[in-house]
Length: 294
Image (cartoon, rainbow, N blue to C red; front, side, top):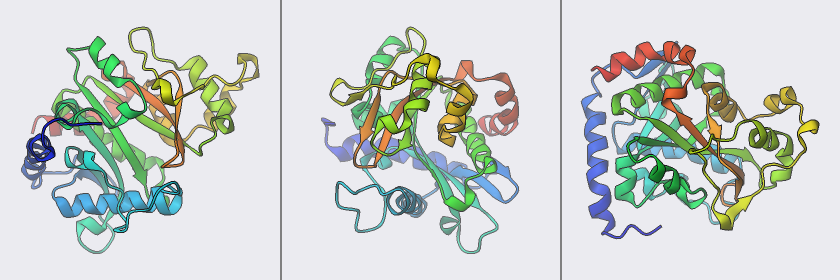
């Protein structure tokens, strides 16, 4: 993806704005908290680097990303979008050491205004997000990506505290639509025929909200006849992140994409904030409203 203007010109302003906002809230309460887990934005480059190290441990060491390319020598998962994104962190405050060594999970947040300066969203390489945005020019989009949690912290509690932070962020910036890629492990879509077919047949985006996989990368999701699909089994086999999106009311794009670099099969998530279940809004709302008003 070409950026046009010099990289430093296009990326410095949103990076500085994000850093300024992070500094402004540095002395305030976290965006969410459950027991010893706390969620907030990264405050400085050291914390962003630590989040990239956590991503490396999950994506490269655990899941085998980088098999098709050389692994980063600094043991960080990083790309140019990190410069314009905000980085949501989950920290275990019960761990010893400085905060940047307490990070146990992270999510990368790319606002539309920053994506414009960066030349587009990360997921546009796989899915035609531009067409969706063009159909809804008055809505504010946010891309969620690079979600990962260390193995010992993969629990409902960690997911809930992450969503406290996301909901606070969404309220603060007036986000209307959350989008992004979500992944199945492995590069053979047929290995996930049950779950992919369930999503294709039951959870497709409504008219006006469709997002197509890029033609050159499109793989079929609808791999099984409807009568062969057991919904209960499909949901049980769903990756936790995708299952969480479903519970929030998310819909999915048409077609999946094989990402050989990361060893995944990706689907596209569309979550309209106005369509999120009221019970989730009530659950996460107290932290979000308190932060958004700060």
